[in-house]
Length: 385
Image 1: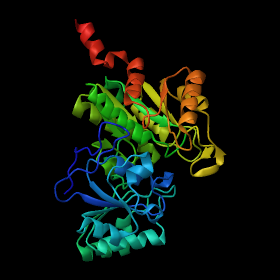
Image 2: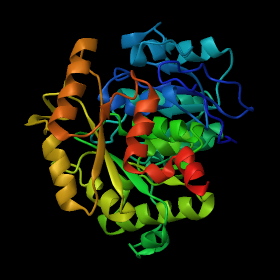
Image 3: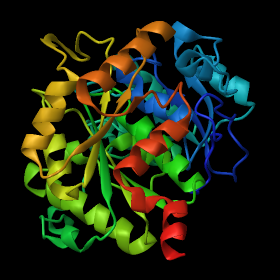
Image 4: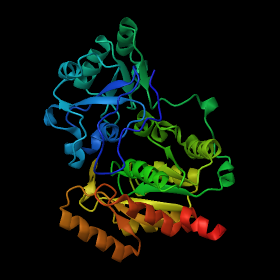
């Protein structure tokens, strides 16, 4: 069985480590044909950057075959090769890995005919399937029959609990005494989960006990201890399930701060999950992730990207909270354009801005400490003295 709490990336955002050796039962290949490094490959992108549950051996995507996954994503090798098919990935491993993870995340959450063929091939070879799509493979007669014949399991990560086990909003969030900071954004697949993961790690390295609450399927696949696939729930239970996970993290970890992963954007015409996250977590602060190089929404090119200023105004009008900073996704930007974009955002909003993947993570930590100075261990020590 897979084990958790074994980080697989290094402290530097630009120096992702190669997968470390894990106990038997955690080896995995990630299938992401045609989408690795793209918005609809965000599950695969996240897994090669960070996985506490699986040892990622390779990624399948013929469009980047023979490249290093870290080089494609972040310009730094991480030792995870991209290969041109399942047979090649198994040959590279030298054995049949335990898991085949579906790393594509299209907006409709459905499998294509070609994708079905690859996953069924994995089952036939004796691999367990991890599926993060809205299409539940355990409801598919062909997949169920194949898995029974091969003696493997299929895990539909987005399948919600029975309604009797779901939570309505209860007000227990008001008993959570530590600050909650939510990472929202101006679009989907813009880097909110990556920023959340980096921020939690960086805060803990500074002696600030931070815990992350995930709200999407990728964080759950990565091995996050607290989280819910929010977009698979009946809306009535969404804010209550977010609240329940935040309360569980508070009671289970006694953290100094809780970082809540965002989904979509509050302004997004197709996704409403940001509203439930704001209501359920009642954050004291929000960090907004923005991609200045995008002109239109990723999966909805008929809609122009909002400005970061308009998103901040909407968030602060919608919820009793304040935006404390902006994190920048550097896609489509040169080094010079990124620096100019960060300067422009800071001048326009009066808030600190940084790119967590190319700039020192201390800048991200200082963004939080500037808004919540009592979190600073040095400040606490001085006050006690």
